[in-house]
Amino acid sequence: MYDHCIISEINTLRKKKNVVILAHYYQRPEVQEIADFVGDSLQLSEQAAATDASIIVFAGVHFMAETAKILSPAKKVLLPDLNAGCSLAESCRPADFRRFIAAHPEHTVISYVNTSAEIKAMTDICCTSSNALKIVESLPVGEKIIFGPDRNLGNYIKTITGREDMQVWDGACHVHEAFSVERLAELKQQRPAAKVVAHPECKKAVLLLADFIGSTAALLHFTQYDKASQYIVVTEPGVIFQMQKASPQKEFIPLPVVTAPSSAFADDCGACNDCQFMKLITLEKIHRALQTEQPEIFVEETIREKAERSIRRMLERSK
Image (cartoon, rainbow, N blue to C red):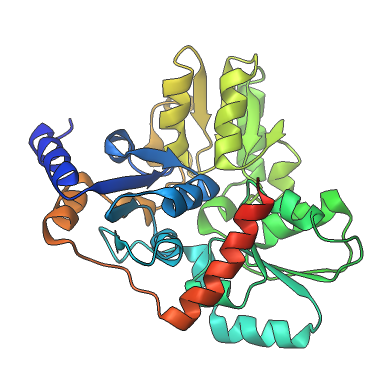
């Protein structure tokens, strides 16, 4: 049950302080419910750039709140739990990435937004899973590219574009890496009518079994308008909350990462691959952040300016 007293207090404080609450699709259902906007990384970046709120409360992870601060430096940006990090962002350390760039001169650097502000400051153009293909294809054929940090997304884009001059950083998201092709094959046998929808951060072997591959927002859109009635969802299971809201007559089956009886597939997300960083954000922590206006996110100005250029280039090319 949701704590309606806390929700009431959140609503009072957000109105009093001119607050916008932005939440990622992977957040807890109750957090998604109280957000002003729920979206994927690209949608949230666009919202952060456009909002006229005085305070942005980011129900997501650290790099997302940093991105909001980069795009809206005059606004106060709050992340309810500073421990909400990202394994993918952590897989790309600034000193290591700087050496990687130096080892591949005259390459255009494209970085996934799942990176720190420092990485974005070294980047020519940012991208998200929603627009990575469009960003890469916006560059002339033959242009040398560095793509980081997600190796699965980078290699997926490299394969479908045929861009051979593309150096891919060896990073990964722990959530999407954990999905097993064997487990997926078993579930497909048990649920032959179900279509498989998968995020491109998954391993290639998993993607080969998918009926549709796309960003979180694209997966939501596909399941809403596709004719099937069952879907095996191969991404962080938080998005299933929005899928069920949009299509209550359909069944959404999270891919388990531990052995579980078939009857538990649709009901027991304890068997699923939750992002524990995303799930650190709670209503109680949002309420506390609104009360104290802490923890606040800061980005050093010289880094912020360079990072903003790479994000703005992404937003311009995504139109």
